[in-house]
Structure formats: structure tokens, C-alpha cells
Length: 474
Image (cartoon, rainbow, N blue to C red; front, side, top):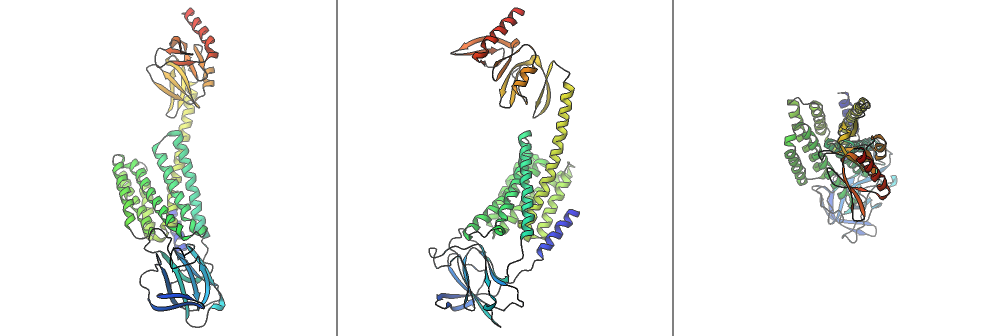
């Protein structure tokens, strides 16, 4: 409960930042004269500010600020822009033009400072010229805001710091689950590694806007990447939760999640696409977790509580879902699961060590440690030992093969008399050698079972002597 209260308090504090209201704009016919912009045929602007594929002149009447704080014209959107206040140039963001060839793309977000002497008592005329010919995919809301507000804006460093800390934790979790997957080859660890990595990547991409002013043509790629990563997270979340609580319905639920994520492409605005892609995955996961609760499966209640928290915060604070709460919630999911997995593996390792200790006084058996656990293999059942990188493969009677986490050199000293090293990567049990023969210019031994094994020239004479001793002794 206290974690929920902390998150809610954080979101309410961030949401209390003051926002400047946009002025009432008019759209005009405009041209750039020697003394500034020349406007005509002005009429109220209906809908949003949309300069995509055209040059757009807009005008508004603004009042002087009530205090001496510095002001600037803040522009957020996929457009190049140029502005004047009372006929005085405030500057430009890129260079707007009537054609794609004449336009120089500006940044997605820009601030044009307004000097104190630019203001005059009473009404002030603000004119902005915009164009957007390089945005790529057409957006429903290409310009987020054109406002006069304090300069600089309130710092986004606290929000950015929280997001980047969450990204670092998610990357660490992705690495941890990746290591666990390499060690244990479990499907759940691979999915959790992917969940953490996808959320971490989205946090990094989401942080690009406050980190640096990027050219506006890159914005469509940025928001498109955010949407795709959110949809991938949703599908992975459904895969993980249904795999735990509804394994038989897993494929069907994943298919529904993919279709739901793809359907969000029809929604207007990338924030809506991203938010609904996440919520669709959470809703499907809630269904699977609820089934787990009904079946009284371990971990189902905690999973359902986390999913309900995700959905509740998304509904209560939708403006922070894509920017912050999603990353914190993702980290709060994978980090506890990683700690639980590490504890479980530690217990398994201690159990393996205990089994190895108990088996140490049984010389007629070889204690084999593998990814699946510890197994005692009767030494007479070993036909041969073949090196496999940092492991060895035990070839046993009956055609069975067992991978052992040991080095060939150590086994050569550990195995009893009757085992002979015939190659740098092969040890054979002489009791199971059927014959020694030549295959072209190479020597091989044929075992009683399985394919022939190579014999190196440097070990050929020692093998012949060992086989002769074995034959004479029998």
C-alpha cells in the first residue's frame, strides 16, 4: 500500500506544474516584407495548428506579462518556424518556406526569447510563420503548442532522472535474466529479459526529447519506435502471465494481444496508440491472472495486484503513463522477480553442492553436474568421454549421451585405470573397445556401441600397448 501512495504522490506533484494557455489564433495570408510580415484575410483558426505540406501564417493578440520574469515563445511540433512580436523579429527555428526545397527543418522543440523592450502596453501582435514538408508520416496533431511562457521552462531533470534510473534498473534486470537463461535455459527467464529490455529501450527513447533538441523530421521515427516498443511489451507481458496461469490458452492470448496492438495503429495520435497498446496487454494479462487466482495458483494474487495497480494509475494519471509510470511499474515487476529467481538458484546450487558432497565417497560412480541437476553415473557404463568446448559429453551404454560441466583434463585424472586418452578431445573405456583400425591415413577405434572415435598419432603406440596389456590380462 505504501508503494502505491508514494507513486500517487509523485504523479500528483509532477502534474501540478503550471501550464501556459495558448492564445486564440487567426490564420492569415502572409508574405515577408522589408519591414516584417504583411498579413491579410485573417480569420479564426479552427482545429489545431497544422502546417503539414504547406506554409502557414498565424496571428494572435497577447497581453504583456504581469511580472519581470523572462519570457519566450515556446514551440513544440514538427515544423520550422519564425516569429515576430509587434513587427520585431524574435528569431527562427530552422527556416520555414513555401516549398520543401526552400524549407530548412528546425527542431521539434524550440524557445525564442522575448526581450523586455519588445512588449508594449495593451495589446501586442504575435505573428508566427510555419511550414512542415519533411515530417514523413502525416500526424493528426503535428504542432503540440505555440505559447508565450516563462523562460526557461520548469526543469524536467527530476522526471528525467527518475526515468533514466528506471531504465538502468530495467537494463540490469534484462542482463540478469539473460544470464539466468544461459545457465538454466528456462523460457520464463528469456521472456522476462525481453520485457525488461523492451521497457528500458522505450525509457531511453522517451528521454530523447528532454535530453537534446533533435530535428523535427526525426520525431515521427521516435514516436513510432515508442509505440512499437509498447506493443511489444504488451505482447511479452501477456505471454509471461498466460504462460504461468493459463498455459493451454497461451498461443490464443498472444494472438489476441498481437491483433489488439496492431489495431491501435488506427487510433489518432501516437500517445493514444502507445497508451492503448499497453492497456490492451494489461487487460488481457488481468484475465489470465484472475484465472490463476481462481485456481489458487502461487503468485497469481501478487500478479493480479500489480496489474490492477498498472491499470488504476493509467486511468487516474493518463498523462504520465507513457512518460513515467509505465517504466516504474515495469521495474517494479521484473526486479522482485529477478531477486526471487536469484534466491531460488542459490538454493539449487547449495543443494547441488550437498549432493556432490554425499557422492564423494562413492568411487564406483561418476558425479555428473549438468544444467538439469546432479546425477550419479556408474563408471562401467561409460563408453567414452568426448570434449565439447568447456564441457564434456559422456557416451553411455544404450546410446545415451550426457553433458557434464567438467574439463576433459580433470576427468583424465579422476577416471580409474582402464580409461585411456586416445586424442586431445577423447577418452575411451578400454573395456568397450572392439577394435583398432585404419581409415585412410587416420586411425580410429570402434567401440561396441556408437560411431568410431579418432586416435591421434602421438597416442597410437600407448593405445596399442594398453590394448595388448588388456588382452593378455583377460
